[in-house]
Image (cartoon, rainbow, N blue to C red):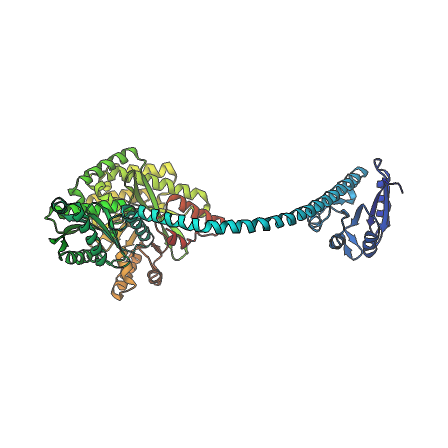
Length: 631
């Protein structure tokens, strides 16, 4: 046999196929081939083990065995001979299986030609050569790795010795960094947290309240009265000593989990966590007053520290520490104006007495004209019967360029009083409906979603309201029944005749109307018959109380039953615990919203939630309760 001959082993139980293969090889002109033939599975393996074979051709069926088994067994013996599988019919599943067990190629006998066979043989041999080269490269790499490992061990030993020498230096550097970090977040005179750290902790509390609205906290801004007299009369050293002693007394007046900070000069801040009501914060301030009644002895001189304090409570729905601090300062300034030595709890009415109110109104007018600072968050409304998200309530936020994200409690009253609520409400309507249509288009599963939008008394007085609703629905393509306009109970009796007329025209368009916060206003059940409502929203105060009080449970049960009898949908808002949800489920209250399921979400988070539901292929939109935990 010439050196250039290629030895081919054919494992084939059909002699005719052997003859056919030999004939094809004879027609190959570029190379010389020697064909060895074995007709059985075992003989083929033995020939493969005992002879120098360059390429092996295996029939797919060899007696009761298969070529796939042959290739797998040959590979198990670590044979480096390339394998080509022959089959009588094209079957992609066999092709894939052959590739998985290690075949170099897959040929269909019926379409086999000398050129195709020769090309496959050469490809298989090159593939085998590549595998051999790869194994050699792996062996070289393993050897290099061993050498590298030895060097690494040597170098590691050297580095350990060097690290030991550096450890002391690193420890000292960390200690210096900690001191620097501490000094950057603490007041050097009193060692209390400074304004930056205080704001950070208040923001954390705001975040916790956003995720769970049953968490209530307050901040108190304490400003010393007539402190300039101490500084001017006894000097700055004595003034600093007074400030240090007062900081100690402040810390004695609060609980271990609360925060006392020096905000600057003679002003302190107190963060009071987990309170039941504003009265708890006032009691803390009163404890401080009693502690400061005791004189401070400075250079044999008795100094009496008096202060004015302003308190802001989280129940007003703050979105940032800065806005909460501003309101606490407003209350503190109000206390000083009323005679000093007083404690005032901030309420919305105080804003009308401050210059900040005028500035905020000016900012609100600018924001309304520009239209790029408002944004909507959307709280899901759950359908308990079907276990899906049925729709959303649009809730307004104002991203103030200086005060950050403001909740509605911080500016809606100004918007109402200035009548800016009309253009703002028009924007809310258009944006909410546009967003609803965008979500509906994402998937057929979203087509039944609805959107609830709050409407103020001034919008009901606006002659353009009907046209705004009609044009918005036409422009977006949203079905009228998918829009629910919410009207608070207290608005109804301002002008009942006009309100009824407007509501009837909205009903003619096909829009659903919802009576919001039912039970908090005049609570006149005749409203349900007098005004054309289709939806009743049970106020959160009843929902919170029903799980704890049997009488409140019966009230909710009666409201729910009455609404059902009148053919109205019922939505319970403010559900925050599993117990409240179970109580509502026991009453067969179909629709529920609240922080138990989810806080209000930014549009991108809603879109992700809907897309995740679509990707799971679920016929309904199940809400992941983790959203309520993540906020």
